[in-house]
Amino acid sequence: MDAQDLTVECRRMYMKGHGVEHIAFVKKIPESDIRDMLGIQTVVIKQKISNPKKPSKMKNQQRSITDAQREKVIELKNQGYTHREIKKRVKISLASIDRIVNKRPSRAKTVKKASQISKPTAKQVHVNQKSRRSKFSLFWGAIEIVKEA
Image (tube, rainbow, N blue to C red; front, side, top):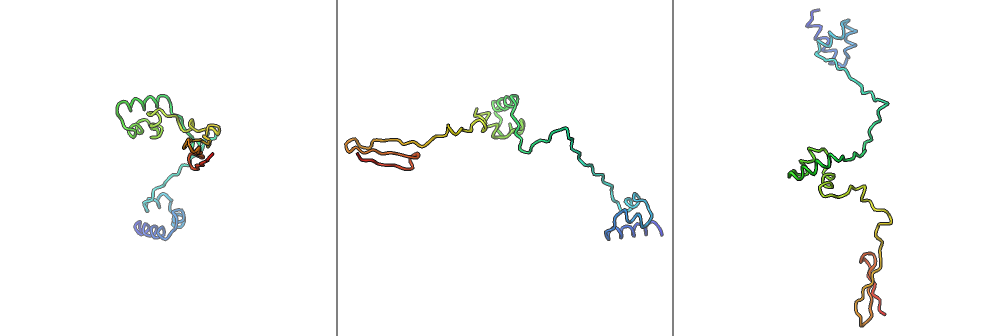
């Protein structure tokens, strides 16, 4: 059997679903020769081994913006760059750039406490002095009560 016939037989076996190891066992040829005949490259898969000492980063972990980044944003804005151009250079979000440029606090600092939330109040408005009618507005104007005295 010449080399060309052997190559054809190995290709037929491979196309039928036989593995390289099986073909090498049946034909009594080293696997490397079979791979060369079939034109198959050996791929080495490296497994990523996690380092137990290094803590894994949380998926939604927030990074704080450094003072150097803030200064760079203000400097670039003063030079006339757009927010998108600044985003590409400084690598922070558009919302963060907008807060820095417009001098607004971050969302975490603007959360209101329960005591700071406005509460509905009754506001008395005199409609007509002669008829002594009073108009009350409740729930930010959603309900109005007119009282005649």
